[in-house]
Length: 125
Image 1 (tube, rainbow, N blue to C red):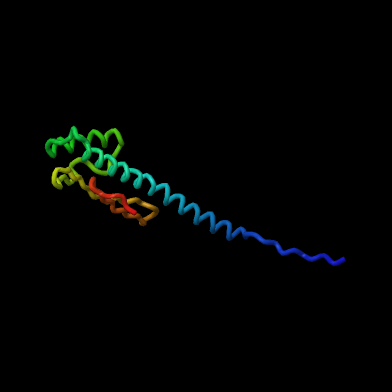
Image 2: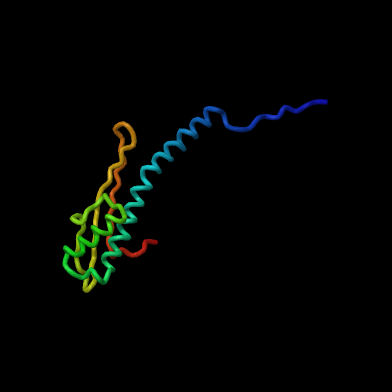
């Protein structure tokens, strides 16, 4: 009887290490980016809520105070009420903002994220 020697299939230890390093890097990158994107989404939500609030139809100062209160509750630290650009479009209040976030990765490498938003933004497709 002649036995056919089956060829082993699979990943070598070197290939496994390369995959683990790549997955580790992607995981670390995601762990640093996700909180920043989440905070941006919180800022957009709070800006839209302040602009749509019928109780806040007063001065620019009233709008900034309302945002500051909401930002404290939502633990928003990337922007302050002074960073808001407030204008009117007809009878609608438009609040816009823009900021940059620098995320250190390792050694002298950093990731720079530019965020901008407005209370008048339409849903993106």
